[in-house]
Length: 333
Image (tube, rainbow, N blue to C red):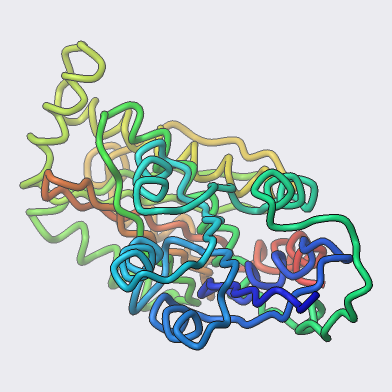
């Protein structure tokens, strides 16, 4: 019996490492890895993807586009989606495009095995000589590990928002960067000075990891967001109340997703509108000693069909970085 050509298609080196570790040890597979849908499609055309473990949120070509291309080109690949985007609509769409199953990240080995078994993709161990697999011990950078943790967390936050607003939330690849205090001060000051932006700030702390979450809205979207909230909640909201509630929901869900993966518990302050409840200068002044440099995670959300965009910025204090490294160490090694 020949080894099964298995394709792992995910832009995150952390996610690929987790999947390699989750593969059944007695499954004879020859593994190919791809970092985006275009690379994945080329591998499938080379017959390297009889079975595919596919992410959705990727640059160049995402998972939805790859599923469409596989269907349109008539490939016989058996595709299992493994994604942090756990919206009900995301699951419905991938199944309609031909995926055989949907597993949420990070996938547990038992769940992956049960799915492979249910789909008839793995059987009793045979006498096949197992091909050498790519190393599941490859080094993963701190930024890569954090980006994957945030990717999973933002997907869970999007699923909650989708249920609350009855929308489909489009997800990006999150950005992870180190910002120095001057850069951060300029970015926050620009957001405050722009009359077309409203920023909501919410502090958080847990297990020595602390920071501020900023949700930045375009004012032209506020009325549409208000209508969605009113339709979903049947409550009377002022614009400020609506933005505070939505921000608290988004930040809370995202932090909860991070906390679950790195085994911490975050406490959150009440959200405040910058420039109203908390002047931007006060925010910078009170945090400047801790924000040299700042670890910044940027997520840009969009609501499909509504033209609504808003940004979530997670700012971790300098002292938090080493604690985050320690928490992520067990995932990276």
